[in-house]
Each structure stands twice: as structure tokens, then as C-alpha cells.
Amino acid sequence: MQTPIRGTISSMESATTRVLIAALLLNLGSLAVGQEKEERTIERSSVLSARIRETADLKRVSFDRLKIESLSDSPLTDWEITDLDGRNAEAELKPKIVEGNLTISPSTLAQFAIKPKAVETKVLDRPTLLELPGGIISTRPGTVGSTKAGWFRLTFLASPLPAIWNPLSERYETDVTFGLKPPSDDQNTSELKKPVDVKVGFEGLVADPAPEIRIGGVGLNQEKSFRLAFLPTTENPVLKVRSTISDVDLELRAMPRLQLKSRQSEMLGFGLEQVTFDLSQVLPHGDIAERDSPLPISVSVTGRAVVYPDQLVLEPQDAQTQFRVRSTGIGPLQVTARSGDSVSTGTIQQTLPIGPLLAVLAGGALGGFSRRFIKGASKKNTTRWIIEGLAISVIAFVAGVLGVGYLMLPSAIVATEAGAFLSGAICGFAGVTVLEKLTSKVSNS
Image (cartoon, rainbow, N blue to C red; front, side, top):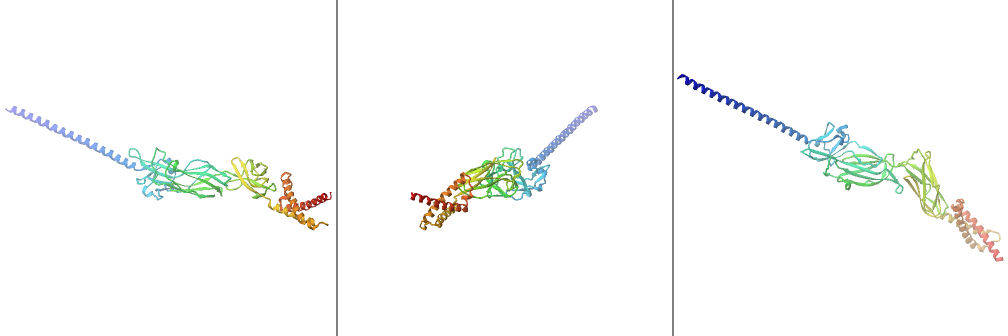
């Protein structure tokens, strides 16, 4: 009886052992699964934290150093960051330079201005489109939750340059155009939140005040232009451009010009007088220009006059040269000197020789009246002699004018009051005497 009981007990012990082993294995499996779930949870938490950090970093805007005009080469204190109303925005934007790039903290300012605190000077010596320092930075959403930024830049163009002299207005002239260049990174269509106002002042030149300039956006239809007619008073005339996004001084360059000066503004007409003109080449502000080669100049005149010589050469060692204009009629004259694209004009008025004519009439009347003092002259013919003297003196005056113009007689004979009076008196006296003798011979025959 003992043997069956022992077998039963052994069987029960084996079953119990198997149950315990199975339970142990089950617990071990549960622990493994829990550990795997915990590891997955930790991994997911790490990824989520990384994405959160990435999203936070995307809220900071980064700009390429090449788009900031050497901003990485100068301290941030050299730059002024404002909103579009000109108020300082550094406290709100918290700008920093990290590895040469400008970064700002998250802000509600979608657009803000940045410009150098020091006024930069640029030289305008050719008609090139300039992007002025500073500008408006416009931020906007990009792809995959990122943020992009672009520049609105103030542009300037003056043409022609160097400026050319206009002899009619006696000013240098060039067309000035302001505009805005849009961001170039993509097809950005964002609009300015506020127009850009630009003021233009002058230094070292004389010009009419520049008009008020307001640019509301990009494109040719938004550009603003005006004609600048100026006369430099110093060697380096300057346009002083001031706006909320750019402050810059622009030095204008202009071509040397011919300067034509008449020694008098009027001359007697009908060939009785000639005028000397002085001609030189000067710098824009008026100083004599230095040359290293001869300067050929052609001269012409519009009106009834003759110019001589009409071809001149201004030598390097000469400050100026001269030419003359002789009258052949009456009315205004325009004298033009030209050398290449440089032109200078001068005007002079030809007037009626009223003074010499009155003098010759007075001389003729006196000459005719003098006939009565000859021995044996009849006093009753005095009036006739005066009239004859007047007529003869006028004829003599016209003959003198023709002689000056065509025979190159000295102009002092009839062109001056003294000469005209003397010639009128002599011709009047002699003419009356000759007429009286001729009249006597006719009567006697």
C-alpha cells in the first residue's frame, strides 16, 4: 500500500513544480514587456522634447551674413534697429549676432528697419543703380513651420552721370530716381506695412528744393523721380538722403564745362562795334580746369554778326583764349562755343546807334550854321544852311557806317559820339559850301 501513495505524491510534486515554473516564466515575460514599453515611452518623450526644442528654435529668425552688408564685421552697437515709425525696437526684438548671423527673439514685429548709425558716403560717378545701406526686414511663415525673412532695400539712380552742363539753364542736370527693391530669395509678395518717406538735402551746391518723396511699395509704378538742376559751389557737392531705413551722403560728379564771358552785354549795331569774348574750361564749381592736352573749340553765332576766328585751340598752359564778334545789323545775338559734348552760350544785344546819330545831327547842324560866319555870307540863308548841314551829315554818317563794315575803316569815326559829332560838323560845313557854289554856277549859267 505504500508504493501507490508515494507515486501519487511524486506526481503531485511534479505538477506543482511545472505550475510554479510556468508562473515564473509568465512574470518574467511581463517584466520584459513592461521594460520595452517603458523604453519606448522614454524614446518618444525624447523625440517630442527634441521637436519642441526645434519648434522653439524656429521661432528665432536667422539671416545670412552676406545679406547684412558686413554686419558680421562690425559690432551690433553700430546699427540702429527700429520699427517702421522710427522707434527703437531693440528691447522687443533682442537682436544678437551668433556666428556672424543676426538673430532676433520672437516678436509681433513682422517688419522692422535696420540701418547703420554712422552716415555712409558714396561717390556718384556713373549711372549705376545703388542699393543704399540699411533696409526693412520682413518676416513671414515658410515651409514646415519655419520662418523666412527678406530685405526691402532703398535704391537710388541718377542719370546721366557725371552730370552734364545745360547752357540754357546754366545748371548741371541729372534725373534722380528712388525706389524699393523687393526680397530676392523667392517670389515674395508681402507688402510694406507703412510707406517709406525720403528727404533730400543739399550741401555744397545751389538747387531748387527737392520734392517730398513717399514710396509705398516695390515696382516701377512706385518709383519717384525728379530733375535735379544744380550749380556746385564746392569741389564735392553732396546729396544728403535721410529716411527711416537709410541715411547716406551721395557725392555728385559733374563734367568740366566751357565758360564763355562777354566783356560787355550790348554793342552798337550796323557794324559799328565789335565785342571780345573770353573762353576758358572750368571745373563744375568754377575753378580753372587743368589740362594735359590741347582743347579744340569751335565758335558760331546766331544773328546778324560775324565771329572771328571761328576755330580755336585752348593750349594746356593757357587759362583762357579770346575771340571777337562784329555786328552787321541790329537785334539779339547768341554766341555758341562747343568742344565735344561741352557747350557754352552767351547772348549780346545789338542796339541802334542813337548816341552817334544824335551827335552827327548836332555836328551837321553846327556845320551848316557855321557857313553864315564866312565873309560876305547872307544871314537870311541860315535856316537853309542848317537843314542842308543836317541832310549832308546823315549821308556822311551812313557812308561812314558802310565804310566801317565793308572797307574796315576805323569805327571811332562814326561809332563814338565825339567822332560822329566831328565828322558831322565837317561834312555839314563843307557840304553846304559845295552846294552853295554849285547853286551859284547854275544860276550864272
